[in-house]
Image (cartoon, rainbow over all chains, first blue to last red; front, side, top):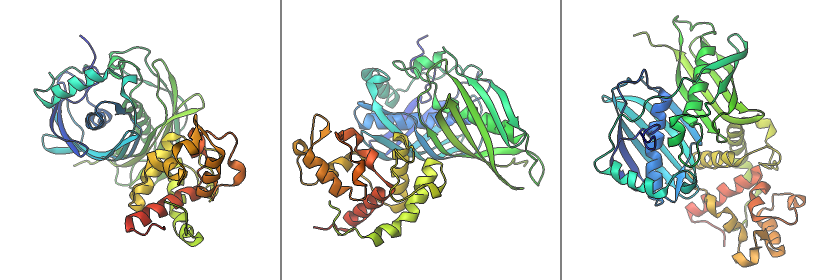
Length: 280
Length: 144
C-alpha cells in the first residue's frame, strides 16, 4: 500500500480550524501496535500544527521540526486510544511557525508542548503541494481512514562508552530504507526528528537507570523534555553518536543534556528533566 | 525606525537579560557573551539559533521582532535599488548599514558585502537595540 500519508502520518481528521489561530484534530492509534511513544504523540501535535501552518500560507511553505521549548510528559498512551489534538498558533509567516499544543486521550491530558518553532521551507522540496492541499481537504471533511501506521523498525542504541550514572554514549544507526521515509518526506526522505528525540530519551532513561535511586526509593522517570533544538536533517543510512550527560542530581530531581552528532556536526540537543516515578 | 537616541544606558539596562537568553539558546557560558560578540563569527550561531534567540527575546520582552524586515529597516531611507544590486550591498548601502549597525566594529564590514551576509554582522548589542526599537514602536515613542 502507498506509504504516503500513512507510514508516518498522525492526523486522521481535522475537526476545527481557524486560519492562523487554532486547530483541533484527532488520531486513532492503531490497536495492533506494541506501543506508541511519547515522541510520536508529540509528532502528532507537531503534524497538526504543520497542517495549520501550510494552510495559512496556501501550501507554499511547510514547517520542519526545529525548536521545542518544553514538552511535558503527562501520561503514557496505549494502542487503540484516540488522541484529541489541539494547537494554538502564535505566529505563522514565510519564515517560521510558532505554536503550543496538547494531546488528550480518553479526556486525560497526555502531553503538553510549549514554545515550539518550525522553520518554514519551500513545500515542494518535500512533497507535492497539490497532494498536500487535497489531503488537507480530506482531513477537514470526511477524514482519513485510520490505521495506516504500522510502527517503525527497532532502532537499537549501541553503547560504546560510559561513566556509570554520569555519562553514556551510544551509536544510532539510522536505517537506509523504511516505509516512514516515503512519508517523511516523499521528495526528501529524512529521519524524523521525533525518532531522534526518542532515541535521546531512551539513552537518558538508560543513564537514569544507572544513577542512585531517588530518595523516596523506586526509579527515575522522564517528565519534561526542554530546549529541544534540531540543527540539521539526518539522511537515511546515517550513523549518529548520541551522548547523554548528567547535569544535576538531587534526591528528588535530576537533569540531563543529550546531544546527537554526525561526525563533528551537532544534529540535535535536548535537556531532560527526571523525577521519581509515581508509584500510586 | 532609526538608531536616534538609543542610549548606552538603555542598552545597559537590557544587556544582562539579553546575554542570559543568548547563552541559554547557544548552550554556552554567559561569560562568553560580550556586547560586541558577533553571533556567527564569535559564538558559532546557526540559522536555527537566530530563530531561537529571536523567539526567546520576543517572549521575554513581549515585543515582536520583524524577522523578515530587519534588512528592510537597515536600509533606512535608501530604496532597495540604492541599497543593493545583485545581492551585493552598494557603497551607499554599506554607509547606511554602518550607521544602523553603529555597534558593529567598522572592520567587520567586509567588501564586497552580500545582503545574505548582513546577519553575520549582528552582535549582542544589535539585539538589544532591536528590542528597544520595538518597545518604542509599541509605546508609540519612535524617534522622528
